[in-house]
Amino acid sequence: MKKILILLFLIFAITGFTALAEPQLSRDYDGVEVPAGSFIPVLSLQDFSTAYTDSTNELKFVCYNSVYEFETVIIPKGTVFYGFIEKKNEPIIGTHASMVVRITKMVFQDGFTIPLVGYIHTTNGNLIGGQMTEPAVYDKMPHMQKRIARHFVGVLQYVPGESRKMGEHVTVASGANLLIVLTQPLYITHTMQ
Image (tube, rainbow, N blue to C red; front, top):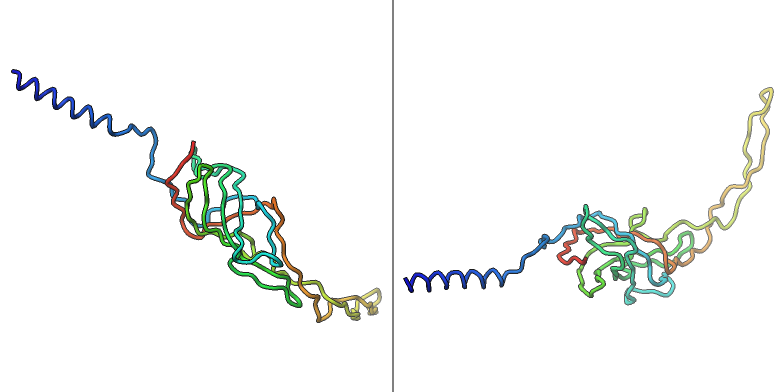
């Protein structure tokens, strides 16, 4: 009888200690996958330009709205994103300067860092700037317009000439609203409450 009681006591003691060793998780910690092509709204924390910023300067952006998946906060407000200028084109005659900004990591407010691959999104293939410049000269050209009683009247109008002005550098101001587009899926294994 003593042996049975000792055996039962040992079984209850071992199962009790193992139950205490495993914490009771109240939520799922498997992680979240943010698919490629998702947008994250950010603010620029400093101004950067094609004139004075190069690929060695680290650019900082902050998420000003929390990003949700259903009711779970995936990216909390205040998360900082880091990036650099991946490609920069100088201004030339006829075209303004342009740059492509790549985002490499995000840092939560508690210091946890997650690497990512993304770009600052524009409708021009993620190229900031690169527009055509204004014409340098306007030429006069006659245009014939049909008037009353089948008479044609010539009118001189100004049309853009062949030459264009010199391009200018592109600057993104501090506090500019921008969008980060993910080019690869982002796996978030860390959540904050």
